[in-house]
Image 1 (cartoon, rainbow, N blue to C red):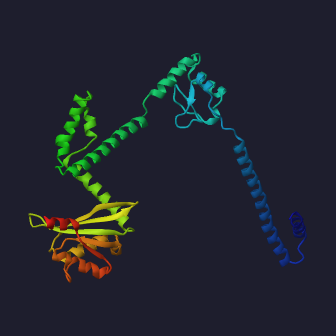
Image 2: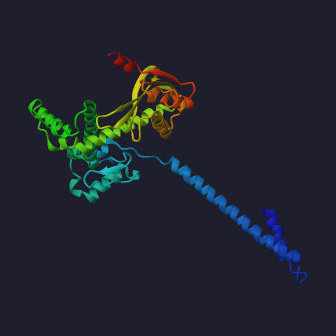
Image 3: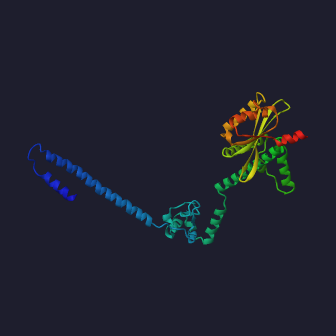
Length: 338
């Protein structure tokens, strides 16, 4: 490259033979371009070596570690980063390069000259008080833990209320006063207002908790039924206020155990015919993305709306799944015997 550079430069310095020497003009252009390329090449090489040497020096740079003897200068490791020294007196945090006795002692003598003659026990007491002092994060963590525990208790108690079938107001009217009485009388603990407040059990709260848990159970069950074969039990009943209610239960094998769960409860708005019942079941399965082919058997009572040959629920279901097994519900059969 240097030889070519020298030859072109020599040729350019010769006098022009003609006013329009195209060869000379081309050489000038090549010379200019080549000069720029050579310049860029050397600059890139310089930058590359600079980066390499910088990284090598950074790798060789030693990360200083804290030594317990630095406490006599009033320094401890920073709580946020143990590789950084922090002054116990002014709480100032220094870089890792300052993690050496001379720099720490210099700070103590210049900034806190009245403390430079203090013995080690003086700084030890300051350190212990600093570590025992409650931090903002610690206070927030404790408060958050109390709120989380109260939230869990609220859900668990709401679940018990739902299982017992009691009114939702029982939580606020009976359970919380009972808990307060037990704490004060049996355990001899003062039932602080914050403890009661951390367990919300108002009427609306209990209702909301029950709805949330029911929705979560339904989602988990439907996700399982998407890929599981199961048996379906359907029953329709008319309530005293002439409201027709449709209940659906499923039974399937999960992890080697037979599981039975309530699938849904729906109101029959128009009528209690087999077609209406089938449409509600089909719409629910479609909404939850549960394939109808996963149903291997159906248990119903002997009502015409269920077992009718042409217009019964099972007849409509067999039109969709011809191989379905229809069974008369054992519970209904026992009820008929009585």
